[in-house]
Amino acid sequence: MPRIFQSALLTLALTTLLSTRSRRRSVINSLRWLAYFDFYDGASVMRTGLSASNVGILLAGTLLAFGVAAYLFQRRDVGL
Image (cartoon, helix red, strand yellow):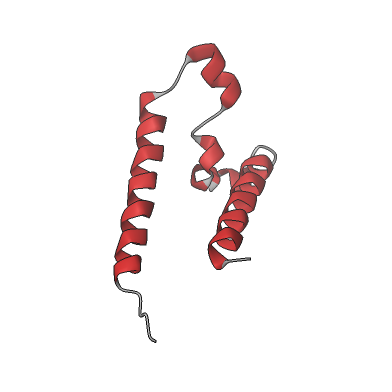
């Protein structure tokens, strides 16, 4: 399996774990903002609609990740 899939699965698993555990423990609750799922809660979106600030944070994170990926892609060393 390519590394990108392993990294994506690990990130998804850790943010899910962080989001789930932060509801129970106050120590981890301070790190809850690192979890993607803290900014998008399907149940509250159905009741109240999307929060503009949460969408902005997720969009900024996406653009930052895309920029870092593009930069690293350009700097890769392709040796033949």
